[in-house]
Amino acid sequence: MKSLEKKQIIIDDTTLRDGEQTAGVVFSLEEKKRIALMLDEIGVGELECGIPAMGKQEQASIRALVDLGLNARLMTWNRAVIRDIQASLATGVQAVDISLSVSDLHIQHKLGKSRAWVKEQLKRSLGFAKQHNLYVSVGGEDSSRADLDFLIELLRIAENEGADRFRFCDTLGILDPFATYDKVKYLAERSSLDLEVHTHNDLGMATANAIAGIRAGAKFVNTTVNGLGERAGNAALEEVVMALKHACNIDPQIDTSRFLEISRYVGQASQRPVPDWKAVVGEKVFSHESGLHADGVIKNPANYEGFDPGEVGLQRHMVLGKHSGSNGLKQRLEQLRVDWQGVDVEALLYRVRTASQRRKRALNDHELLQLCRVA
Image (cartoon, rainbow, N blue to C red):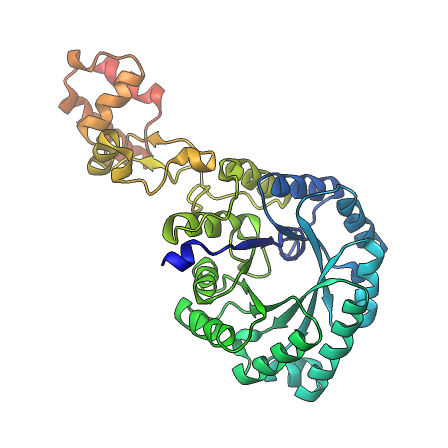
C-alpha cells in the first residue's frame, strides 16, 4: 500500500466532452467556460474539452477555453484520422486523444477493417500528431473486449511512435473491478507507456473499475462531474476523488470543498438534477434518522460518517421520523430552543413516529413544534 499511497494520480475530467455526449445534454459556451474554470480552480489536471471535427462552432468553443489560460491541460477527442487532428490543431490545444477501435468486434462490425489496418491507421495518425508536437493519449475504444496481446502490439507501436500514454476504455461498462484490475495489470507489466482508465457505469461499477485500474498501475483516470456520460454515464469525479482519498490513502490534490457547488451547477446546466441520495454530493447523504445511528453521530460523527460532510461542501442533518430515537429528538429540541426536560420525551417520540408513518415522510420543524404544543 505504501507505493500506492505515494503514487501521483492525474484526473482527466471529460465533463465537457463525454459528459456533454449524454443524450439530450447541451452546454452553452458560458456554461462550458464556467465549468472549465471551476474544475481548474479546484486542481483538476486535465480537461477533455470537445470534439473539433464536429465543426466550426465546436472549434470556436474549444478556442474560447484555450483563451482562458487555464493551468489544466486541455485535450480534444479525435478519431485516428489526420483531418480530425488538423481540426484540433486549429483550436490551439496542445494535447489530443486519438481514438480507434481495438476489439475484433468493432474492427469487423463497425469499421469493416482488419487488425493490420488498425495498426497502420495508428502509425499514420499518431505520427502526424507527433510531427506537430502534440501530447497524445492513444484511446483504445472497446479495450475491455479486445484481445490483450493485440493491445500489447498497439502499445508497442504507440510507444515507438512517441505516444505519451494509452487509454484503456471499458466503452460499454461491462467489466467488474477484478477483471479491470487483471487487464490493466497485464498491460502495465508488459509496457512502460503510461496508462489511463476510462470507465462507464452501465453495470453501476464505473467508480469501482476506475479505482481498480489505478490500483493495477494506471496513472490517469477519466471522470465527469455527477457521472454524466453516454448511456449510464462515466465514473463520477467526486466519487473517484473521495475514494482515492479515503479508500486508497491517495491525495490527488483536489479542493473537494467545492464539490457541492460544482455538482449543483453541472446538474443545472445539464438539466440532470442531482438526486438527494447521490453518493458523496447528494443533499441527504449525511442525514441521520435511525435512533442508533443518530445517537452514534451525536456522540461522535466518526461513528457513522466516513468523512466530514464539510469536506465536500455539505452539512449534516438530523431527521425526525419513524425510526428516530429519544437522543436525536432531544438534540433537535435543543436546537429549536425547546426545554425538553419539561416535555414527556417518550410520549412525544411516539407521536413523532406515528405522524411520520401517517405522512410517509420525516417531520419538519413546524410539525414538531405543533406536536410539542399538543403535549
